[in-house]
Length: 69
Image 1 (cartoon, rainbow, N blue to C red):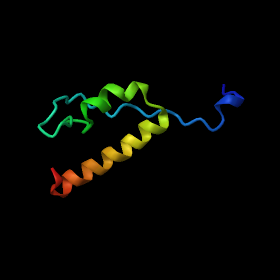
Image 2 (cartoon, one colour):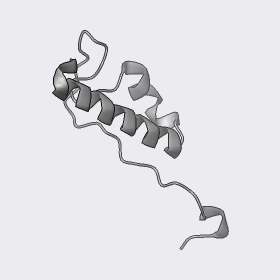
Image 3 (tube, rainbow, N blue to C red):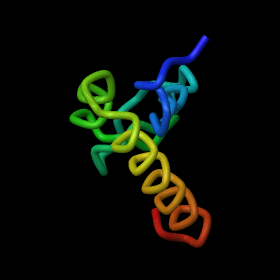
């Protein structure tokens, strides 16, 4: 059951980790494309920050698909 304090609260997303964990020479995980700092900081991020990072990861993935890395 939700309360009045839950109204407007952004739900936290699932971690983008896909259990393919290896940092490349670019400093990004080959599985989720997060940096070491982003991986370590995920649990301390607000849901809004997590969603913003997921959008950034989408941009990174698109750049890689377009020959960006």
